Image (cartoon, rainbow, N blue to C red; front, side):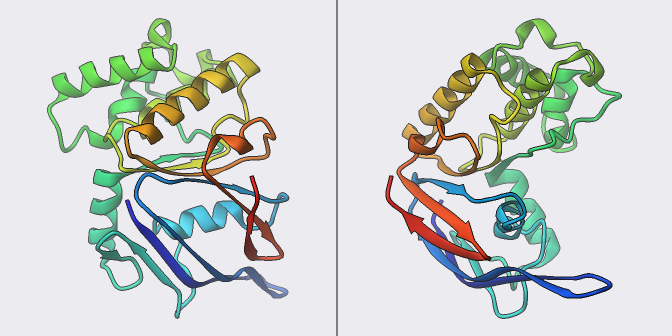
Length: 224
C-alpha cells in the first residue's frame, strides 16, 4: 500500500491549554516498505498511527492518502470499509473482549461479513502461527500479557491486510516470542505487505528498511 502524508498536524484541546502533538509531519511510503518509528513516551507516536488510518482525525489542512483513498475527504463509512478490508492494527493495550475466547477475539472483526466456518478455520491457523493453538478457547483473563498480545496480532491478520499498523507489538513479549513475532512480520513484509511499527525495543529497530524519530511533534528520518 502506498502512503502519502503531507502537512499533518494534530492538536488536542485540554481545559487548560492547546497541545500540538504533531507538527507538519511529511513522509511517503512505497508498497511493501517497513517503517519503524521511535520516540519518547508522549511524543505522539500512537496519535500518528491513529491519524494515518483515520481512527483519530488530523487537523484541517492535513493530507493523508492511502493508495486511492483521500482520508481527509472520505466519508466515515468509506474509511471504516477501507480499514476493515485492507488494514490490520495491533494495539499496545490488546483491546480484547473479556467475555470471548481467543478464537472469537481473532475472528470478531469479520464475523458480520464472512462465513463463520471459514473464519473459524482461518482464526485457528493464525493462532497456531503465533504459537497459541493450545489457548484457542481460553478467555483473556486466563492468558498472560504476552499471550494476549499474540492474540491481538492474530486478530490483526484475520483480514489479510495490505498495511499493518503496529503500536508496540512486542512490548509485552519475552525475547523468544518477540523474535518469533518479528519473524512473522518479516515474512509478511517479504510478501509485499507494508508495515508501520512503533517501538521502544532497540532489538526491533533494525528489522525494517526505514527508521524515523518523533521529536517535539516532528518526524525526522534516521540512519539505520
